[in-house]
Amino acid sequence: MHHTYPVPADVNTVFARGAGSRLWDVDGREYIDFLMGSGPMILGHAHPEVVAAVQRRAAEGTQFFQLSEPTIELAETIAGAVPCAERVKFAGTGSEATLVALRLARAVTGREKILKFEGGYHGSHDYAVWAIRHRDRLDYPRIARPDSAGVPATLGDTVLVAPYNDLETTASIIQRHKDDLAAVIVEPLQRSIAPQPGFLRGLREATKQAGVPLVFDEVVTGFRLAWGGAQERYGVVPDIAALGKAIGGGYPVGAVVGREEMMAPLTVEALREGRHVFYSGTFSGNPLTATAGLATLGVLHRPGTYERLEAAGRRLARGLRDLCRMLEFPAFVAHEGSIVDILFTEAEVKDYRDTLTADAERGTQFRLGLIERGVWSPPGTKFYVSLAHSDEDIDRTLEAAEGALRALRR
Image (tube, rainbow, N blue to C red):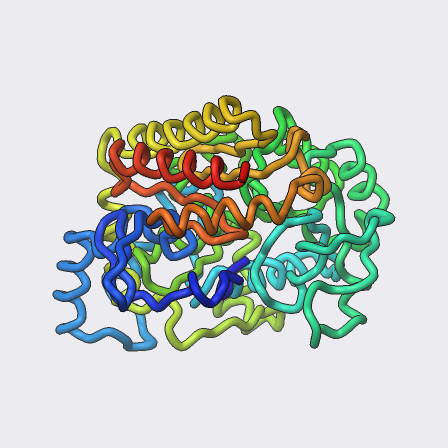
Protein backbone atom coordinates (compact mmCIF):
# COMPACT_ATOMS: atom_id res chain seq x y z
CA MET A 1 0.00 0.00 0.00
CA HIS A 2 1.43 3.40 0.95
CA HIS A 3 5.01 2.56 1.84
CA THR A 4 8.40 2.01 0.21
CA TYR A 5 7.65 -0.58 -2.45
CA PRO A 6 9.56 -3.87 -2.41
CA VAL A 7 11.65 -3.48 -5.52
CA PRO A 8 15.06 -5.23 -5.73
CA ALA A 9 18.14 -3.29 -4.70
CA ASP A 10 19.44 -3.06 -8.28
CA VAL A 11 16.19 -1.37 -9.37
CA ASN A 12 15.35 0.67 -6.26
CA THR A 13 16.58 4.23 -6.43
CA VAL A 14 16.43 7.71 -4.92
CA PHE A 15 14.62 10.42 -6.81
CA ALA A 16 15.98 13.89 -7.38
CA ARG A 17 13.20 15.74 -9.15
CA GLY A 18 9.94 15.51 -11.05
CA ALA A 19 8.36 17.62 -13.79
CA GLY A 20 5.11 16.93 -15.58
CA SER A 21 4.84 13.19 -16.25
CA ARG A 22 8.53 12.54 -15.57
CA LEU A 23 10.79 11.61 -12.69
CA TRP A 24 14.60 11.70 -12.59
CA ASP A 25 16.65 9.76 -10.07
CA VAL A 26 19.96 10.84 -8.53
CA ASP A 27 21.85 8.97 -11.28
CA GLY A 28 20.07 10.98 -13.97
CA ARG A 29 17.77 8.19 -15.18
CA GLU A 30 14.46 9.45 -16.54
CA TYR A 31 11.12 7.67 -16.05
CA ILE A 32 7.55 8.19 -17.17
CA ASP A 33 5.88 8.20 -13.77
CA PHE A 34 2.57 6.48 -13.06
CA LEU A 35 2.92 6.34 -9.29
CA MET A 36 2.42 10.11 -9.17
CA GLY A 37 3.13 10.38 -5.46
CA SER A 38 0.54 7.61 -4.90
CA GLY A 39 -2.15 9.75 -6.50
CA PRO A 40 -1.93 13.40 -5.37
CA MET A 41 -0.05 14.66 -8.43
CA ILE A 42 -3.14 14.70 -10.64
CA LEU A 43 -1.78 17.67 -12.63
CA GLY A 44 1.70 16.15 -12.88
CA HIS A 45 4.84 17.07 -10.95
CA ALA A 46 5.77 20.70 -10.30
CA HIS A 47 2.83 22.17 -12.21
CA PRO A 48 3.82 25.78 -12.96
CA GLU A 49 0.62 27.30 -11.54
CA VAL A 50 0.92 25.32 -8.30
CA VAL A 51 4.62 26.16 -7.95
CA ALA A 52 3.99 29.88 -8.51
CA ALA A 53 1.10 29.95 -6.02
CA VAL A 54 3.13 28.15 -3.34
CA GLN A 55 6.14 30.40 -3.86
CA ARG A 56 3.97 33.50 -3.35
CA ARG A 57 2.31 31.99 -0.29
CA ALA A 58 5.58 30.84 1.31
CA ALA A 59 6.76 34.45 1.55
CA GLU A 60 3.58 35.38 3.46
CA GLY A 61 3.80 32.71 6.16
CA THR A 62 3.17 29.00 5.96
CA GLN A 63 1.75 27.98 9.34
CA PHE A 64 -0.44 29.86 11.83
CA PHE A 65 -2.60 27.22 13.59
CA GLN A 66 -5.38 29.73 12.94
CA LEU A 67 -7.83 30.34 10.12
CA SER A 68 -6.39 31.81 6.95
CA GLU A 69 -7.95 33.00 3.71
CA PRO A 70 -6.67 30.09 1.57
CA THR A 71 -8.05 27.59 4.11
CA ILE A 72 -11.50 29.15 4.05
CA GLU A 73 -11.47 29.39 0.26
CA LEU A 74 -10.44 25.73 -0.12
CA ALA A 75 -13.20 24.65 2.29
CA GLU A 76 -15.76 26.67 0.29
CA THR A 77 -14.54 25.11 -2.97
CA ILE A 78 -14.84 21.61 -1.52
CA ALA A 79 -18.30 22.35 -0.10
CA GLY A 80 -19.43 23.60 -3.51
CA ALA A 81 -18.19 20.48 -5.28
CA VAL A 82 -18.78 17.46 -3.02
CA PRO A 83 -22.49 16.59 -2.62
CA CYS A 84 -22.38 15.55 1.07
CA ALA A 85 -20.10 18.41 2.17
CA GLU A 86 -22.30 20.70 4.25
CA ARG A 87 -19.35 21.15 6.63
CA VAL A 88 -15.58 20.70 6.19
CA LYS A 89 -12.92 19.87 8.77
CA PHE A 90 -9.29 19.68 7.61
CA ALA A 91 -6.88 17.00 8.77
CA GLY A 92 -3.20 16.31 8.17
CA THR A 93 -3.56 13.11 6.14
CA GLY A 94 -6.14 10.80 4.60
CA SER A 95 -5.56 8.31 7.45
CA GLU A 96 -6.48 10.99 9.97
CA ALA A 97 -9.57 11.87 7.95
CA THR A 98 -10.95 8.31 8.04
CA LEU A 99 -10.10 8.03 11.75
CA VAL A 100 -12.02 11.25 12.54
CA ALA A 101 -14.94 10.24 10.29
CA LEU A 102 -15.37 7.00 12.24
CA ARG A 103 -15.01 8.82 15.57
CA LEU A 104 -17.77 11.21 14.52
CA ALA A 105 -20.04 8.31 13.53
CA ARG A 106 -19.51 6.70 16.92
CA ALA A 107 -20.26 9.97 18.69
CA VAL A 108 -23.44 10.64 16.71
CA THR A 109 -24.85 7.11 17.02
CA GLY A 110 -23.57 6.16 20.46
CA ARG A 111 -22.49 2.81 18.98
CA GLU A 112 -19.00 1.33 18.67
CA LYS A 113 -18.75 -1.15 15.80
CA ILE A 114 -17.91 -0.36 12.20
CA LEU A 115 -18.34 -2.44 9.07
CA LYS A 116 -15.66 -2.30 6.40
CA PHE A 117 -15.06 -4.28 3.22
CA GLU A 118 -12.52 -7.01 2.68
CA GLY A 119 -9.52 -5.59 0.83
CA GLY A 120 -10.57 -1.99 1.52
CA TYR A 121 -7.80 0.40 2.52
CA HIS A 122 -8.60 3.27 4.89
CA GLY A 123 -5.15 4.27 6.08
CA SER A 124 -2.79 2.97 8.71
CA HIS A 125 -4.53 3.70 12.03
CA ASP A 126 -5.49 0.85 14.36
CA TYR A 127 -9.14 0.62 13.24
CA ALA A 128 -8.18 0.55 9.56
CA VAL A 129 -5.63 -2.26 9.38
CA TRP A 130 -8.07 -5.19 9.37
CA ALA A 131 -8.80 -7.37 6.33
CA ILE A 132 -6.67 -5.33 3.94
CA ARG A 133 -4.51 -8.07 2.43
CA HIS A 134 -4.91 -11.22 4.51
CA ARG A 135 -5.32 -14.61 2.85
CA ASP A 136 -7.43 -16.30 5.52
CA ARG A 137 -10.89 -17.53 4.66
CA LEU A 138 -13.33 -15.29 6.48
CA ASP A 139 -16.45 -16.29 8.29
CA TYR A 140 -18.08 -12.93 7.55
CA PRO A 141 -18.28 -10.60 9.37
CA ARG A 142 -15.53 -11.68 11.80
CA ILE A 143 -11.78 -11.46 11.22
CA ALA A 144 -9.29 -13.13 13.51
CA ARG A 145 -6.28 -10.82 13.34
CA PRO A 146 -5.18 -7.44 11.99
CA ASP A 147 -2.74 -7.01 9.09
CA SER A 148 -0.20 -5.24 11.29
CA ALA A 149 1.72 -6.10 14.40
CA GLY A 150 1.22 -3.81 17.37
CA VAL A 151 -2.57 -3.44 17.07
CA PRO A 152 -4.65 -4.35 20.16
CA ALA A 153 -6.48 -7.60 19.44
CA THR A 154 -9.54 -6.29 21.31
CA LEU A 155 -10.20 -3.82 18.48
CA GLY A 156 -11.18 -6.84 16.38
CA ASP A 157 -14.40 -6.95 18.40
CA THR A 158 -15.37 -3.56 16.96
CA VAL A 159 -14.48 -4.20 13.29
CA LEU A 160 -16.82 -6.25 11.11
CA VAL A 161 -16.00 -7.25 7.52
CA ALA A 162 -18.17 -7.72 4.44
CA PRO A 163 -17.35 -8.76 0.85
CA TYR A 164 -17.27 -5.82 -1.57
CA ASN A 165 -19.82 -5.92 -4.40
CA ASP A 166 -21.92 -8.52 -2.56
CA LEU A 167 -24.99 -6.51 -1.62
CA GLU A 168 -27.02 -9.42 -0.29
CA THR A 169 -24.39 -10.52 2.25
CA THR A 170 -23.59 -6.93 3.21
CA ALA A 171 -27.23 -5.93 3.71
CA SER A 172 -27.84 -8.97 5.91
CA ILE A 173 -24.82 -8.12 8.09
CA ILE A 174 -26.01 -4.51 8.43
CA GLN A 175 -29.50 -5.61 9.39
CA ARG A 176 -28.23 -8.18 11.87
CA HIS A 177 -25.83 -5.78 13.61
CA LYS A 178 -27.65 -2.45 13.19
CA ASP A 179 -28.05 -1.89 16.93
CA ASP A 180 -24.26 -1.99 17.38
CA LEU A 181 -23.09 -0.41 14.09
CA ALA A 182 -21.80 3.15 14.19
CA ALA A 183 -20.89 3.23 10.50
CA VAL A 184 -20.29 1.39 7.25
CA ILE A 185 -17.11 2.64 5.59
CA VAL A 186 -16.34 1.92 1.94
CA GLU A 187 -14.04 3.01 -0.84
CA PRO A 188 -16.68 3.60 -3.52
CA LEU A 189 -14.01 2.44 -5.99
CA GLN A 190 -12.22 -0.22 -3.93
CA ARG A 191 -8.54 0.19 -4.78
CA SER A 192 -9.11 -0.22 -8.55
CA ILE A 193 -12.20 -2.48 -8.45
CA ALA A 194 -15.31 -0.74 -9.77
CA PRO A 195 -18.63 -1.07 -7.95
CA GLN A 196 -21.07 -3.39 -9.69
CA PRO A 197 -24.23 -1.69 -11.01
CA GLY A 198 -26.57 -1.02 -8.09
CA PHE A 199 -24.10 -1.96 -5.35
CA LEU A 200 -23.48 1.52 -3.93
CA ARG A 201 -27.11 2.53 -4.35
CA GLY A 202 -28.18 -0.65 -2.55
CA LEU A 203 -25.63 -0.01 0.19
CA ARG A 204 -27.02 3.51 0.65
CA GLU A 205 -30.53 2.09 0.92
CA ALA A 206 -29.51 -0.65 3.37
CA THR A 207 -27.70 1.80 5.68
CA LYS A 208 -30.62 4.25 5.58
CA GLN A 209 -33.12 1.56 6.48
CA ALA A 210 -30.96 0.41 9.39
CA GLY A 211 -30.22 3.95 10.61
CA VAL A 212 -26.47 3.44 10.15
CA PRO A 213 -24.30 6.28 8.78
CA LEU A 214 -22.55 5.58 5.47
CA VAL A 215 -18.95 6.79 5.17
CA PHE A 216 -17.25 7.13 1.79
CA ASP A 217 -13.47 6.99 1.81
CA GLU A 218 -12.77 9.34 -1.10
CA VAL A 219 -9.12 9.97 -0.30
CA VAL A 220 -8.28 8.50 -3.74
CA THR A 221 -11.47 9.22 -5.69
CA GLY A 222 -12.20 12.76 -4.47
CA PHE A 223 -11.73 15.26 -7.33
CA ARG A 224 -10.19 12.45 -9.42
CA LEU A 225 -13.17 10.46 -10.70
CA ALA A 226 -15.14 13.69 -11.23
CA TRP A 227 -15.28 17.24 -9.87
CA GLY A 228 -17.65 15.92 -7.18
CA GLY A 229 -15.69 12.67 -6.84
CA ALA A 230 -17.28 9.23 -6.64
CA GLN A 231 -20.46 10.78 -5.23
CA GLU A 232 -20.98 12.62 -8.50
CA ARG A 233 -19.79 9.79 -10.73
CA TYR A 234 -21.98 7.11 -9.16
CA GLY A 235 -24.86 9.33 -8.03
CA VAL A 236 -24.77 8.11 -4.42
CA VAL A 237 -24.38 10.51 -1.49
CA PRO A 238 -23.02 9.26 1.86
CA ASP A 239 -23.51 10.89 5.27
CA ILE A 240 -19.83 11.67 5.66
CA ALA A 241 -16.69 11.35 3.54
CA ALA A 242 -12.92 11.45 3.91
CA LEU A 243 -10.84 13.34 1.35
CA GLY A 244 -7.10 13.70 0.73
CA LYS A 245 -4.52 13.44 -2.06
CA ALA A 246 -5.80 15.71 -4.87
CA ILE A 247 -7.10 18.47 -2.58
CA GLY A 248 -3.57 19.21 -1.32
CA GLY A 249 -1.84 19.71 -4.66
CA GLY A 250 1.05 17.49 -3.59
CA TYR A 251 1.23 18.69 0.02
CA PRO A 252 0.10 16.69 3.07
CA VAL A 253 -3.67 16.95 3.52
CA GLY A 254 -6.86 15.29 4.67
CA ALA A 255 -10.41 16.48 5.16
CA VAL A 256 -13.60 15.17 6.73
CA VAL A 257 -16.75 16.44 5.05
CA GLY A 258 -20.35 15.64 5.76
CA ARG A 259 -23.89 16.50 6.65
CA GLU A 260 -24.29 19.10 9.37
CA GLU A 261 -25.70 16.57 11.82
CA MET A 262 -22.66 14.30 11.38
CA MET A 263 -20.16 17.15 11.77
CA ALA A 264 -21.89 18.82 14.74
CA PRO A 265 -19.78 17.08 17.46
CA LEU A 266 -16.73 19.03 16.22
CA THR A 267 -18.32 22.41 17.07
CA VAL A 268 -17.91 24.71 20.08
CA GLU A 269 -21.61 24.18 20.85
CA ALA A 270 -20.96 20.45 21.22
CA LEU A 271 -18.12 21.21 23.62
CA ARG A 272 -20.47 23.25 25.81
CA GLU A 273 -23.03 20.44 25.72
CA GLY A 274 -20.53 17.71 26.63
CA ARG A 275 -20.81 15.76 23.36
CA HIS A 276 -17.68 17.08 21.72
CA VAL A 277 -15.43 15.04 19.40
CA PHE A 278 -11.82 16.04 19.84
CA TYR A 279 -9.58 16.33 16.84
CA SER A 280 -6.60 18.61 16.40
CA GLY A 281 -3.62 18.57 14.05
CA THR A 282 -0.82 21.13 14.04
CA PHE A 283 -0.69 21.39 10.26
CA SER A 284 -4.35 20.71 9.49
CA GLY A 285 -5.62 23.28 6.99
CA ASN A 286 -2.32 25.16 6.86
CA PRO A 287 -2.26 28.00 4.29
CA LEU A 288 0.56 26.53 2.18
CA THR A 289 -1.26 23.23 1.57
CA ALA A 290 -4.54 25.10 1.03
CA THR A 291 -2.89 27.36 -1.55
CA ALA A 292 -1.47 24.37 -3.45
CA GLY A 293 -4.87 22.67 -3.25
CA LEU A 294 -6.70 25.73 -4.56
CA ALA A 295 -4.31 26.06 -7.49
CA THR A 296 -4.78 22.37 -8.30
CA LEU A 297 -8.56 22.49 -8.07
CA GLY A 298 -8.55 25.65 -10.18
CA VAL A 299 -6.91 23.74 -13.02
CA LEU A 300 -9.17 20.71 -12.54
CA HIS A 301 -12.31 22.86 -12.76
CA ARG A 302 -11.53 24.11 -16.27
CA PRO A 303 -13.76 22.83 -19.08
CA GLY A 304 -12.60 19.56 -20.65
CA THR A 305 -10.21 18.57 -17.85
CA TYR A 306 -11.99 15.40 -16.77
CA GLU A 307 -12.64 14.41 -20.39
CA ARG A 308 -8.87 14.58 -20.97
CA LEU A 309 -8.16 12.48 -17.88
CA GLU A 310 -10.77 9.92 -18.96
CA ALA A 311 -9.34 9.74 -22.48
CA ALA A 312 -5.79 9.16 -21.23
CA GLY A 313 -6.94 6.46 -18.79
CA ARG A 314 -8.97 4.79 -21.53
CA ARG A 315 -6.01 4.85 -23.94
CA LEU A 316 -3.74 3.13 -21.38
CA ALA A 317 -6.36 0.54 -20.35
CA ARG A 318 -7.30 -0.36 -23.92
CA GLY A 319 -3.66 -0.62 -24.90
CA LEU A 320 -2.87 -2.99 -22.05
CA ARG A 321 -5.92 -5.13 -22.84
CA ASP A 322 -4.98 -5.30 -26.52
CA LEU A 323 -1.39 -6.29 -25.70
CA CYS A 324 -2.46 -9.06 -23.32
CA ARG A 325 -4.91 -10.38 -25.92
CA MET A 326 -2.33 -10.25 -28.71
CA LEU A 327 0.36 -11.96 -26.62
CA GLU A 328 -2.16 -14.39 -25.09
CA PHE A 329 -1.60 -13.40 -21.48
CA PRO A 330 -4.66 -13.98 -19.30
CA ALA A 331 -5.13 -10.63 -17.57
CA PHE A 332 -7.81 -8.43 -16.05
CA VAL A 333 -7.26 -4.74 -16.69
CA ALA A 334 -9.18 -2.73 -14.11
CA HIS A 335 -10.07 0.76 -15.27
CA GLU A 336 -12.15 3.59 -13.88
CA GLY A 337 -11.54 7.13 -15.06
CA SER A 338 -7.85 7.90 -14.65
CA ILE A 339 -7.09 4.84 -12.50
CA VAL A 340 -5.79 1.69 -14.23
CA ASP A 341 -4.45 -1.59 -12.89
CA ILE A 342 -3.52 -4.98 -14.33
CA LEU A 343 -3.85 -8.38 -12.65
CA PHE A 344 -2.66 -11.56 -14.32
CA THR A 345 -5.73 -13.73 -13.82
CA GLU A 346 -8.45 -15.31 -15.92
CA ALA A 347 -11.09 -14.16 -13.42
CA GLU A 348 -13.20 -11.06 -13.76
CA VAL A 349 -12.12 -9.13 -10.67
CA LYS A 350 -15.18 -7.99 -8.70
CA ASP A 351 -13.85 -8.25 -5.14
CA TYR A 352 -10.80 -8.88 -3.01
CA ARG A 353 -11.14 -12.68 -3.24
CA ASP A 354 -10.82 -12.42 -7.03
CA THR A 355 -7.53 -10.52 -6.70
CA LEU A 356 -6.06 -13.55 -4.89
CA THR A 357 -6.42 -15.58 -8.11
CA ALA A 358 -3.84 -13.34 -9.82
CA ASP A 359 -0.30 -14.54 -10.50
CA ALA A 360 1.52 -12.18 -8.12
CA GLU A 361 5.02 -13.17 -9.28
CA ARG A 362 4.13 -12.48 -12.91
CA GLY A 363 2.69 -9.12 -11.85
CA THR A 364 5.90 -8.23 -10.01
CA GLN A 365 8.12 -9.23 -12.93
CA PHE A 366 5.95 -7.21 -15.34
CA ARG A 367 6.28 -4.08 -13.20
CA LEU A 368 10.04 -4.57 -12.86
CA GLY A 369 10.16 -4.94 -16.65
CA LEU A 370 8.43 -1.57 -16.98
CA ILE A 371 10.95 0.06 -14.64
CA GLU A 372 13.85 -1.38 -16.68
CA ARG A 373 12.24 0.21 -19.74
CA GLY A 374 11.83 3.66 -18.20
CA VAL A 375 8.30 3.52 -16.75
CA TRP A 376 7.96 4.00 -12.99
CA SER A 377 5.07 1.85 -11.77
CA PRO A 378 6.36 -0.35 -8.94
CA PRO A 379 4.90 -3.73 -7.94
CA GLY A 380 1.72 -3.46 -5.91
CA THR A 381 0.71 -0.02 -7.20
CA LYS A 382 -1.96 1.33 -9.51
CA PHE A 383 -1.34 3.40 -12.63
CA TYR A 384 -2.39 6.92 -11.67
CA VAL A 385 -2.89 8.80 -14.93
CA SER A 386 -2.42 12.58 -14.69
CA LEU A 387 -3.19 15.56 -16.88
CA ALA A 388 0.53 15.69 -17.68
CA HIS A 389 0.50 12.28 -19.43
CA SER A 390 0.42 12.88 -23.16
CA ASP A 391 -0.67 10.44 -25.86
CA GLU A 392 3.01 9.99 -26.62
CA ASP A 393 3.70 9.09 -22.96
CA ILE A 394 0.93 6.48 -23.06
CA ASP A 395 2.19 5.05 -26.35
CA ARG A 396 5.76 4.83 -25.04
CA THR A 397 4.42 3.14 -21.92
CA LEU A 398 2.58 0.59 -24.05
CA GLU A 399 5.80 -0.09 -26.00
CA ALA A 400 7.55 -0.73 -22.66
CA ALA A 401 4.63 -2.94 -21.59
CA GLU A 402 4.94 -5.01 -24.77
CA GLY A 403 8.66 -5.46 -24.15
CA ALA A 404 8.03 -6.43 -20.51
CA LEU A 405 5.32 -8.94 -21.48
CA ARG A 406 7.49 -10.51 -24.20
CA ALA A 407 10.34 -10.85 -21.66
CA LEU A 408 7.97 -12.84 -19.42
CA ARG A 409 7.64 -15.40 -22.23
CA ARG A 410 11.32 -16.29 -22.11
